[in-house]
Amino acid sequence: MTLPSQDFVSRVLDVVAAIPEGMVMSYGDVAAAIGSRAARGVGQVMAYYGSDVPWWRVVRASGHAVADHEARALAHYRGENTPLKWSGEFFRVDLTRARYIP
Image (cartoon, rainbow, N blue to C red; front, side):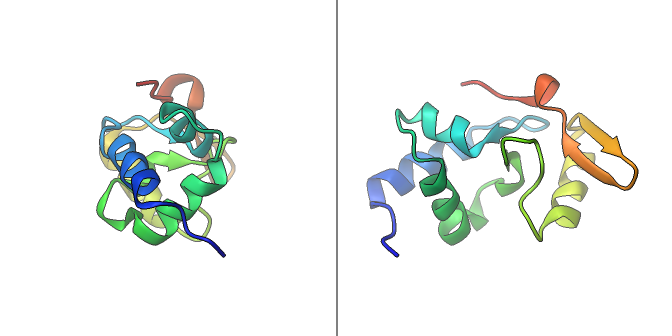
């Protein structure tokens, strides 16, 4: 697997760091914000370099949190009053109300 360039990494992390509390962007939104269509590249950046930025503010296009990190993300969403939609015990971010567009 080829990792993204350092320039791409820096640009992605800058966008994610600027997402306000209670708001989110999808991987595709982050890519578009830096003039790219590489949503999967954004996912790679977040997986390898995203631990020092608010990673929970980057969600799948469906509004679902990062797989296998839902419980940790939920704690952050509750602390930031991020709008959520619930279906039984499952949740996703309400993108209509919480999507951030820089």
